[in-house]
Image (tube, rainbow, N blue to C red):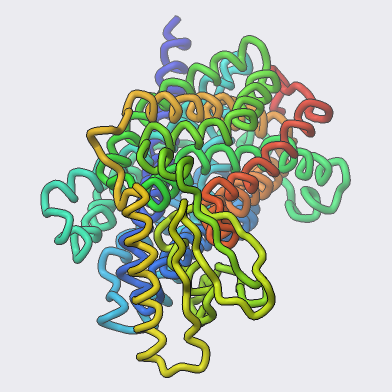
Amino acid sequence: MAGERQQSASMRTVVAASSAGTAFEWYDFFIFGSLAQVISKTFFTGLPDAAGYIAALALFGVGFAFRPLGALVFGKIGDQAGRKGAFLATVLLMGGATFAIAFLPTYQQAGIISPILLIVMRCVQGFALGGEYGGAAIYVAEHSPANRRGWSTSWVQTSAAFGLFGALMVILITRAAVGIEAFDAWGWRIPFAVSIGLLGVSVWMRMKLTESPAFAAMKEEGQASKAPYAEAFGQWKNLKLVILAFLSMMCAQGAVWYTTFFYVQTFMEKFLKVDPVTINELMMTATAISAVFYVVFGWLSDRIGRKPVMLGGMTLALLFYFPGFHLLEKAANPALAEASAKAPVVVVADPKDCSLQFDPVGKAAFVTSCDIVKSALANAGVSYANQTAPAGATAVMKLGGVEVVSRSATGLPKAEVKAVKTAVEGEIKAALTKAGYPAKADPARMNKPLILGVLLVFVIAATALFGPLAACLVELFPTRVRYTALSLPYHIGTGWVGGFVPFFAFAIVTAVGDIYAGLWYPVAFTLISVLTTAFLLPETKNRSLT
């Protein structure tokens, strides 16, 4: 009995230390995504509004793009030197980069140096997080009894919720304390700066840990891999597991989770015109509730298996993407939904006069009559349909019975181009207002319970997929190359698929003109995983890790 109590206490320490450190790293990473609007104004002042916002979202994704590199580097360290040292180093790197962001100069202060420094810090964050998750998940799983592995590792999954909740809470409190104007000017730095205290706690907790028993036994027997890359990716028996993990679980994980917790924020803020404070409050509530479901679904996977729980989650998300986001519009901004139904916007233009409304670097001029009207609608977050006009015709925006004739600024001096764009945008805004298109969502008409209900459906889908995922990934790979082989597909899925969800979805909307068009990005990746999981993924519950 005494031995069982000692083992239980040890397991609690393992779970607490691993989850706390991971929560801190998620906090660091999520601050950036939640402050994309402020970041775009601070570090991309030289770009137009839409381009600056896309650039900020792209930079959010850049951090994720470096995660596979971190996965490879720290995966090799973890498979050769040990799990503990690898994820102790990652938390130090992440903490240092996050703290440094608080003191970066703005674009107005340092020009192009400002976004360059931000990119460097973001890359360091992504590199560090690439080695964090695999180490924490493996460390906990290799300490856990086989029949409780889903429950134990689900606490590592829950750390994502704690990290996101902490980030949203600190942002909300800071914004309320200093005021919106001061927050946008300098208060945004506070959430980054306070991370130094969390770093100290995380390092202290992780210093108390010992090496995982599975790795220690393998090391003692001289069985540790001497060439993790060659074994993990050069041997087909392991490489096919890497590919299977990516296609079956990680495509959906990236798409579902980041749509649920990040793109939904972009959608509500940019297209539904919901106040950022309201979005933070709703997301904090949904995130707090989600923390329970990770553990519930992890526990359930110990009973009925990993595969049915994860497949159910990704299938629910796949079926709910479009209905859910349509419900969000009706609940968050009913005036917009009503105006879109009564007076849909149509742009009548010569296709040769229209450019792709996607300019992440702010270099495109957009001076034709078609480009000017579409740019104005994109910046207003209004959906529109396209109608072909005769060759050489001037673009026209039709709105109910009203027509706004655009003008071309091709070949004009810069000052005159600005004047033409301002005039056309003013006419378009006036027409939209007259037709009932709101400049902002009306809080009095907002149905917050319905918004929260929609968010919770997505939360259930995301947590059902993510809750058992760590256990399934750990059980899928052999101990010798587990850290390396597990980390790469995980971070390609969450980094390259998930991290770029807000960027690509927003860019697709801006290019096409339909605020729902961006959902095809997560739909495509989720569908890949649903089919692969259903037909190819084996059940891994209760597999031996040695």
